[in-house]
Every structure is written in structure tokens, then in C-alpha cells.
Length: 250
Ligand code: GLP
Image (cartoon, rainbow, N blue to C red; front, side, top):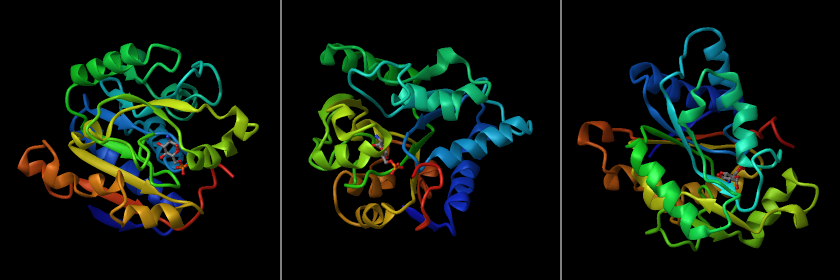
């Protein structure tokens, strides 16, 4: 992983957006793996600005998101569907038929995981996967003790994740206890990974980012284990880190 130290949140966001925008310019039909959380919000804001200036075109881009809360309606403002539309999709010319997220409203776990894995196979290689990192080092909703051999699966969120994510809800009781998440195995198949780490939680998150704590240790090994062609493996994983807090979410 190539670590890029950003001077503040804005700088981190611009650096991540630069890598993603280069990808979209060089390959207009790119498949982008997208993430939620406060860390990537500035990246989306920057991409929207460049789109509005006419520098970027998302018409042929396909997106796949990492995760969604189980039992969450897409119109709920805490759903990741809502988040993605609010911060990105509704502001660019992406084709709605090319937007893919797990369906939190599907109660049958087996069915939804099989459906989403089929979607992931059908879109082909993810060109760039944008990632944040949870306070306890989770990636998507792959908690530290999760089994990394899995594809899409339904996880029981840990108490620390419920505690960390309650800031977005009225209370901890409102945080869903389960979520669908893309598996680490699938994330590792991305040709490139851009991990953005910011905020007051970045002290602990960075600790995880540079340690052997799973699942981040798998991400750190990405170039070696990636299925990407050798030519693409050079600097295939970027960690863009700032100690500055995200201004987006208190
Ligand atoms: C959620 C998401 C993760 C994200 C994490 C950290 O739990 N499922 O994908 O990385 O939040 O969010 P933040 O960037 O706000 O610290």
C-alpha cells in the first residue's frame, strides 16, 4: 500500500477524487466500488464539482456499493441507498440501471447474498474500490473476526460498530443489528483500492490501518494477492490519511 499523508480532510478528499477521476477519464465505462461513512463524503463532493465543471462524465460508469443495513428501507435517510443518492448519484449523470447496492429489505439472507454476488460477477472487475475504515478496523461491514473467505454475507454488527455508528441515528437502539456486506474476498479482487482514513477516529483507525489487524491486513496485502494483471499492480493500493476530522459529520 502506498501511504499518502494529506494535510487535512479537503486535501485527502481531493487526492482520492483525483485518482478516481483519472480512472473515469481513462476508462469511461469503469466499475467503481463505493463506500459510505463520513470519510468518503468529501471525495464525492469533489467528484460532483468536477462533473458540474464538465470535467467528468459518469454516463457509462457502473457502481457497486459495499454494504447496506439489513431491514433498512432505501428511502430511510440512514440507509446507504439514501446516503449514496444524497451525496453522489443524484448530482451526476450516472445511469440508475448501473447503480448496485445490496437490498437491505430482502429478508432471505441466502437469496440476497446470492443475488448480489451474481451482480458483482456480472459487472466484471472493479477498477477502483473506495474504502473507509471503521473505528474497530472494519471494512464495509466485515468485522475484525469475520471470515475473509466469504463473498457477500449478512453480518451481526459488533457492539463497537453499533456504538460508533449511533452518531448517525437518534439512539443506539435505532442502529440495525445486522447488515449485508460485500466480502473481503470480493474487495480484494478490485484492480485498485483507495482507502481514505480521516477524523478523530483516525487515531484508532490508522492504528488498525498500519497494523496486522484483520480485515485491514488483507487490504495491505492487496497488490500481492490481487488478480489484477502485473502491470496494474504497481501502487495498486493507496491509503490517503489525515489526522484532521471530517467536517461533514459531527
Ligand atoms: C460504516 C461503513 C464503513 C465505513 C465506516 C466508517 O460502518 N459500513 O464502510 O468505513 O462506517 O465511517 P467513517 O468514515 O464515518 O469513520
